[in-house]
Image (cartoon, rainbow, N blue to C red):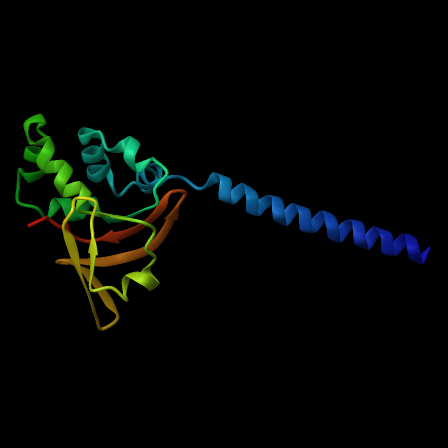
Length: 166
């Protein structure tokens, strides 16, 4: 009787371990890429529209890894009236690409690593300035308001302003 009870305990423990392992695999497989994560968040509609207008969707859905300093819709709303509409015009595509790629750093740079940097070179080619004061991080003139949103191909850090290349 005892050996039967032990066998049942071992089987139950094994099944529990396998089910936990299966949940972990499912979560990893379900992780969305940068674009799908931004779409799903609902607060990056302007950013997603700009990425679509420039044809950068496939790039940001690619292998990566990428670090994106993602301005919210409220951040875009802080720009002077008409700026977003002007940038979305087909004739301003190159300028919009430059603005968007200035928000992207190659590699996966988590918040713990960002705070150790003074600057980071962007995909656009210029570097963003990184300042840590009073436990808060600024990227150029934008405050980082949420960090380490992991995606299947990188990480998103949410910022409260649109940063512009010089």
